Image (tube, rainbow, N blue to C red; front, side, top):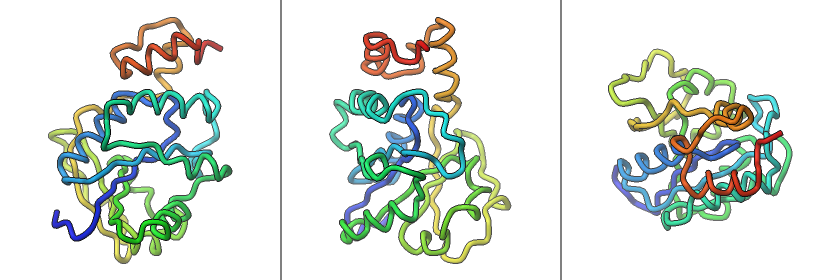
Length: 200
């Protein structure tokens, strides 16, 4: 990737809770694309998912801040959480571009999200503002036939090591009293125990 300005990738999600899969996505994308920063943008509510958050926004933010300690290149951006309501990527990127016109933005998505891109709000306008980073598992080839024909769609591909961790599984395991240390950053696991998060 040829850098002509500051390069920032955005990883959006509920982060309910943030887990090692999220950090792997960020680390691998940061390294492979020689980025300057990665922003974690927690959603208030996803437009393509039911609002099934297990924690309050304050709880999710607290876990996210704990997870990113020790990662100076990673930071939490509170724009969607503070704005509230349904979080549309186009609104967020327009806001980020207005504040930081010097930045080239990249939006990280999993390979399983590619086929849904045509459903994203104002997707053509969004494609003019940033580049998608499509993340796949090592050894898995993204089926380009599944990528919708969207004008000005630009994307890069990155392989990441840990993509099979789901926040919903972690919440279920905690509620059932099962171990989750192997799925979470230590600081996040410790905070969940300390504050009895996800215990019902």
